[in-house]
Length: 124
Image (cartoon, rainbow, N blue to C red; front, side, top):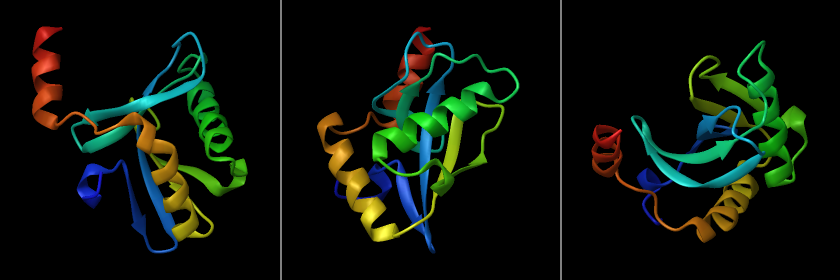
């Protein structure tokens, strides 16, 4: 994951934007790896909460803040309030956040390409 286009995050001024593909009612709260989304690579996460009254979004923010060891106040849901693909903005030291994301996500390997994601969608 050396090309910035291969990462589910990007620096945007003083923030880091993180793309996430969320599965609500997923049986457990976990960050599971990388996946392809229509907008590019995304972090794959699941939460136990149902997508009702913002419960899944709140659970996602709590999950990511725990996973990155950041305070919840540093994370904001920027878009995707009612969709599975979310965009979180993370405030704070952008360089440190980016380094932390890189370290946490190296164990996931490379994300599938959008071509692979389209092929998988056709099989469903």
